[in-house]
Image 1 (cartoon, rainbow, N blue to C red):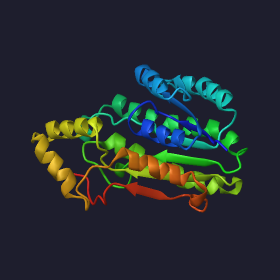
Image 2 (tube, helix red, strand yellow; image 1 turned 90 degrees about the horizontal axis):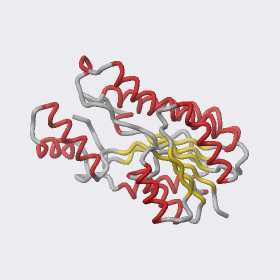
Image 3 (cartoon, one colour; image 1 turned 45 degrees about the horizontal axis):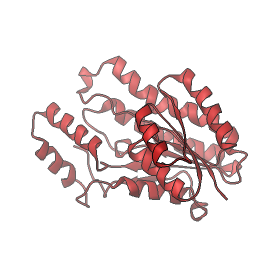
Image 4 (cartoon, helix red, strand yellow; image 1 turned 180 degrees about the vertical axis):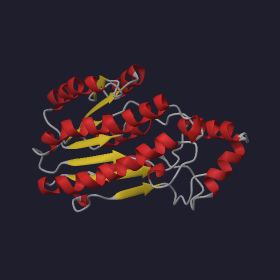
Length: 253
C-alpha cells in the first residue's frame, strides 16, 4: 500500500533525491520548495509527484501550504524535514544579527512549524515517521558557520525530545547528519571557506577530505537510501537516533 510522504525543500539536491527514492517505492509524494523552476522540472520528470511553492522562511505561508498538501495526499505517514540554508561564511564577530536570525528562522522555526502541523496526521497513521535532516555541523563545531552549526545542533535536541514525546503514538523520529555532499553546493561552500581563509580551493578540499576515513564526498543517493530504510518496517525499532553519513568525519576545519 502506498504511503503518504511529505518532503520540505524537495525540489532539488538532497530533497529531490529523497523524493525520488520514495517515488520509486511506489509512495505518494508531495514536495514543497522555494524554487518554482526546480519544482516544475521535477513534476515534468515525475508526473505523479505533487508539488507546491512555498517560502518556508515566511511562517504565515506554511499552514496554508501544508493544508493543501494534506488534502492532496489524504493524510500523512512520513514527514521529511529537509529545510535549511547555510548562511554566510564569516567570523562570529562579523556575523550580523539579521543573518543569524534568518538562518535560525528557516532551519529551526520552519522545521518546528512543519512538524507541529504534521503531528496530528501522523498520530492517525499506522506507523508515523519523522526524519529530520541535520548536518555533521550538528555534532561538531564549524568555524565561520556559527549560525548554521547552532541551528543544526538544535535539530538534534528537537529530534531527541520529539522521539520521547511521540513514541507512545508509535511515531518514530530520527535525524540524519550528512557530511559534505557531492555536488555544486559543496563546491560553493568550500570556495566560500577558501575565500574567508585566504587559501586555495584545492587546499580547502584536501583539508576537508583529510579529516575523514573515507576520502570521498557523500553521494546524495545514499542519504535517500538511508531515509527509505528509516521509514521502512525494518527500522520499526529505531527512534531517537543520530545517524551520521559522512565518511567517518573526525573534524570540521
